[in-house]
Image (cartoon, rainbow, N blue to C red; front, side, top):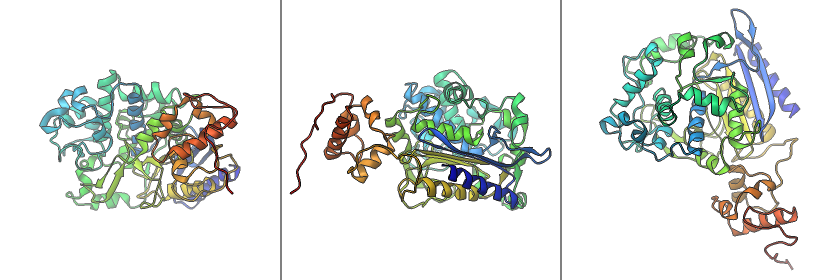
Length: 457
């Protein structure tokens, strides 16, 4: 991975030197280990403060990945499940025909309240109780679960209030206690930033021409259906101390390595912590709803709280990646098939994901990419047996299984339930385990294969 570290560093140095970017961070994890940590440029142009690995950036909707992750951790612990009706936890939300809306609908942007009230101000966004009351009293645009539109702001308040009602704690506290602190990134991954930490954040700046572009947009633009002009995520908005300190979990303030570490811990142990079981990982990263976005008119496909695919990936081809990008071009994702977690954060708010696409392509070329051709790596891929069919191998790796010793803690029935696994593939696994003196949790190791081989003649 030393070559990849050098390539990424050279790429982001070039982006800064060319004037395309002001400051960036990149972090990449592989099988739970960090393999790339790169920074370039300045976090604050006025003071010249350089970007450091622990500099938090307001990465806007990239933080939705952390919001979804908190929900999944609580589902793992039994606080609620994906079919729980939101009104069971938050009775006021059931008003105006939303009584059947579920946690699943909230996570797939299908709950039906994608916009905030037309008169909402930045100060209103910082008022948790006020925003939750306004959203609860909203009339749904459609029957929950039947259509989709990106819930730009409302996603964070809805999921956050589900968390608060089920735990008695604000979502920022649950993020700190159950995700950030155990992973060793408590001072790099936030919703609301403590006032004492504001001086560590990167200062955002708008790309040239973006202010004029926003000013020229007509008031009836679909863009403003998400929220009024005053709440559009610009540099001025994102540098406000009240906004930075507020819990607005439609976005997050994070370093690249913090959000990448979180995604890595969804797939593997990091710092001795794994956030989700392989079965849960498979569930949350699979396509959960596909349709046409009711606001922007583009086809979309959502996993449970995450977008499917990665920057620069083929939008029509197969992908095992899931993650979130944010206004301005920051992006973070995980690919369970190859065990990669990636994040790029930056402080110049550009209108595309060009920087993330370029760097993610370097990672894909060096390591490989799920659902496509595999690249070369100087690390071992796995010790799964040769001869497994592609559907079986994808099913196992997608569920987080890449090493034979992992099967000692699961039953044959659990593995056989994976889509793509069959009796033949299970037999190959049994023989490989037996050869290593291992077995499934419900079996015993022996010195002979558990299924006879057919001799070829």
